[in-house]
Amino acid sequence: MTAAFARVPELLAQHLLLAFSALLLGLVVSLPLAVFSSRNKTVGRIALGFASLVQTIPSLALLALFYPILLWLSALVGGGIPALGFLPSLLALSLYALLPILRNGVTGLANLDPAVIEAADGMGMTRGQKLWLVEAPLVAPVLMAGIRTAAVWTIGAATLSTTVGQPSLGDLIFAGLQTQNWILVLAGCIVAAGLALAVDALLGLAEYGIARRRRGLVWASLAVLLAAAAIALAPAWPASRGTVTIGAKGFSEQYILARLIGHRLEAAGYKVRYREGLGSAVAFGALAANDVDVYVDYSGTIWTNQMKRTDVPPRAAIVDGVAGWAKATHGVTLLGSLGFENAYAFAMRGDDAKRRGIASLSELAPQAGELDFATDVEFLERPEWAAVRRAYGLNFKSARPYQPTFMYRALASGEADVIPAFSSDGRIAADHLAVLKDPKGAIPGYDAILLLAPRRAGDLRFQAALRPLIGTIPVEKMREANYLVDRDRDKQSPDAAARWLGRGLGR
Image (cartoon, one colour):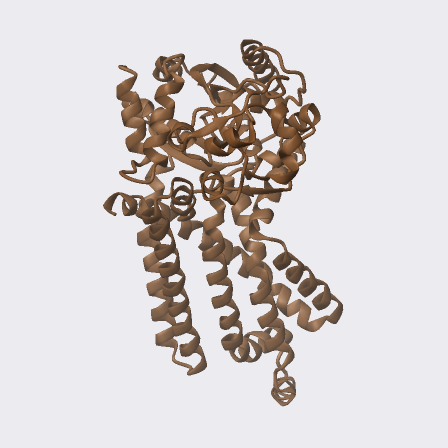
């Protein structure tokens, strides 16, 4: 429990920074737009229509969409626009904050008593005086209700910023779901919910003060809110300077390897932070853009997803091809292979495979129409799946994506019959799974490779700290480390598993 909450102060600071910034930007955009919309019905219809449309887009999708947009803009202006982390999260969440503020502002202004407006006109007030002295005070309670709604939405949606590399309380939730560490999930949920309730209560107090014309209450509640934010944000500032960013995708092995890299860099005197839960395309793009300094990828993933290659040469040729392509096209350095392969390996429950007489993908194909297929969230859209389908003509009864941990759960519970397991996963042996052979060689090699950002290409000290990892991790050791995190009982944290793995390397 203590370890789960140890990361809360840092992540809470980042969460507050993002949520408050998004809310502030939403206010800056929506308040003048609300005034303009109330004066012009055409503008009002367009503005409210756009804000409503944004709400129909899933927040996770909106966050993901800003990544390629910012990458394109950065390329257009010659670089300098960060496509990962704070900026895409800020823009996406600010759009979500628009609707409740804009709608309440327009509604409040449109429903003011005409007699009050006529009285203000009769007194010879200018438009600005009328807005500031008459309309704003009358609309403020309604507007504050919209701001409260926007604040709660923004704080809740900010947990999803983890997927685009922005630290938040979502780091605890996503990591906990993947590793089935429910204490982490509860820690993230409890703190995020508590933060939303606290902010809503303080804004509600301000709303009450405005409605009762008690300015002291308004300023006191806002002062408490700002003071709390300042205190919580204070730890975030020193950590942001001169820190190495280590990337990781969203499964246990990646969390472990990220911590293993972090331990070595810390021992060499670097400060480190982690960007976890990244998708494959986002992770490589972030590295190429220097938003991430180092992460572990897999040669087959780069070969198929980034290079768009469909041929399947030997493993060593794939690694060499990836190294040359990454350096020539993106300035990315492939420091070397870690020593093990984590390939996709189609697997079934051992007793089920034996009963059906299935030992290879060729033998699976005729029976696939009777079987349910569970995959990780990326696999159905990956070139590897298209290649396997072309080679073997697989056509399952159903295919459902899961987070990797729940994919294994679906197989064990009987909700699925086949999964694309990971060859370095300790659950293959622990769950007595049968790994199906690939006689046609449709799946490429997936050597774990250490990739460095362009700005680390000439950093010899940085490379020297990581070079001892090259070629030193056998797949058996990686399986054991993974199983320390993924097993049901006596579960270890990724950090503890990384320390165990580091000791086992004897370095």
